Each structure stands twice: as C-alpha cells, then as structure tokens.
Length: 255
Image 1: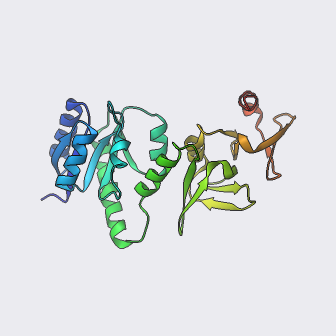
Image 2: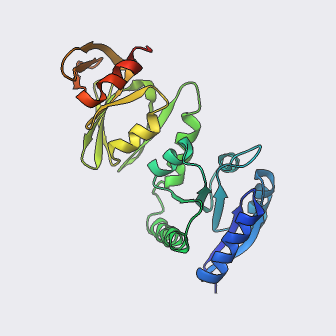
Image 3: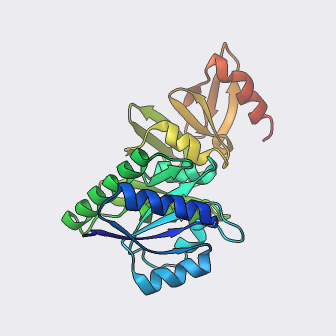
C-alpha cells in the first residue's frame, strides 16, 4: 500500500525510467502515477493527479523546473529536485534546506530523501501555521532575479523580507548568522554564514574573513594592513584576512 503518490518530471526518458525502477524495487510506499518531459505537460499532470510528491529536474530545455513551481499560487505537494548541475540554483535549494538529488544518485540517497519528505509531512501536520521551506525558496528565487532584489530571512516568527542593498554585512556566530542592516538594526538567522555567501555571491557580496561577509556596495573605504580593514557604512571596521586580501582588492576595484 502506497503512502506517497509521485510524478517524475525530467526531459530525459532514461532518467525517468531509472528513477521509476529504483522506486519500484527499493522504495516501498511510493507509487509513480505519471511522468512528464516538460513544464507544460507536468503542470497538466499535477492539476489532474494531485500528487503528494514531484521529482523535479532542474535543467530542462525551454523552461527549467523552477518555471513549473512559479505557475502555482500555492504548492500543494512536496518536491525533491534532481539535477546534474551544481549551479546557482542548487545553492538556493541548499540554503532553504530543501531535498535534492545530484545525478547520478544512489538508492540510499533516494531513500534518505524520501524519509526526509515523510518527516516534513508529519511536521507540517503538527504545525499547520508554519511556513514551509518551499515558500521561502520560491520567494528567494523570485526576488533575487528582480531588479529590486530582496531576500526572505526565516525567523522563529515567520519571514522578514529585506532588500539586499539594505544589508551591510553578515557575521558568523557558529551555526547562526547575525545580519546587520543600514538602519542600524540586526537580525539573527539560523543559517551558517557559508550559505549566505553562496546565495549572495552574485549580488556584490564578498567573504573577506571566515567570520565576515560584506556588501561591497556598502563599503566606504579600505584601511591598509597585513590583511587590512573594510570600513562599512554602519561604522564597523571589518577585518580582511591576509589570504583573502588579494581577491578582495581585485573585486573591490571593480566598484
């Protein structure tokens, strides 16, 4: 008896066949009710079959997997992303703690992803008011592609939507990151600094030190030294590590 009704979205038939075979042979409780090779066909399948789970390829011709998700006002299914490319999109997936399988993946990796899917489903049932990681992910994917970029920051009370240009710097505190804003306020977020570094790498942020990520647009000057210091718009002097100095100065000279 199945507890998960799934569809597979992938532009390559051999990938669909391989995943379906793994599910049938090694993943009891999962029923594959359909498959699609493109976004249009996948949207029709989801509307018709109402799956619990979609295995979604990221890179597909014409429209990528994220274009499918943007067509839904509310995501009523879980998603396990499948991709062969470790690109910017995978950074965003990791940041929001969503499940993904990097091709080629093993049976164990597939089973672990399904176990996480079941756990999240149970958690949502216990806490119906919580925002899902998918909600946060879609918000970040949409806003980071817009001219006035914002980032959705998950907190214990929900989400804080903050324009990227209003972030002055991010400071590591173990597995947490403290974010400092142009209005002198700050916010602690339960994500390590490395994940912010990956998410914001394409929007003028640079990690100058193991503990510091700065917005180059908010840097006022650089003070020479062994590594030196970046003087930020909020008055902070942020240490630049010696080993990052050359790359930092090269990047800073572009502004």
